[in-house]
Image (cartoon, rainbow, N blue to C red; front, side):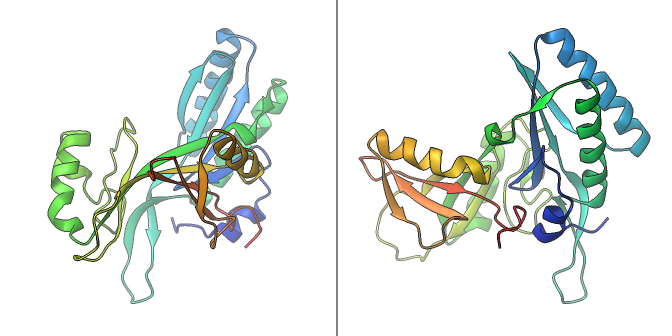
Length: 235
């Protein structure tokens, strides 16, 4: 199925879900483990009907779900087709079904609580160094370029954060090249930035805000707070 644009995701009006990085994320509050298990059984049945399932994790007081298709089709515009990890219509359909199940079972969504962490490494030679990071992070070279048209490292099992490579010049002066990408819901962005500033951090670059806000700690180590504004219907 074709990968969907942020505009199409926003048009679906999925109030319980937020688009972070490649997928749709939702958190539902639960009273106890049994309630969460009952919810996941119903989610599994809905997934069986559609032939697609979310990644699921249950913790104290919540169930986290992630929907992403590993066979989304990306068309760069040159007539070629690439298979990538992204949101497709199948994910939207299942997200709507899960929202209905949650409502039937009296569960409340907490969309502002979802987040996703990715790693970024600025380099001019990603093809050269990517195999090393694929081996370190996942133990297999197959994770290099998995579900991505680039050298990005993605663990098929989702055990570790994705590592993507940003552009850097060969003669760049030495500086921190690793940084964290923290994806949050649009409504959580201001609170997250305020918390960083209150803790002693600073804003380095907000020229691409609200989509990207670069922050730094007191030693200059950087992170980026990311919001998919297109999927929020704000781009």
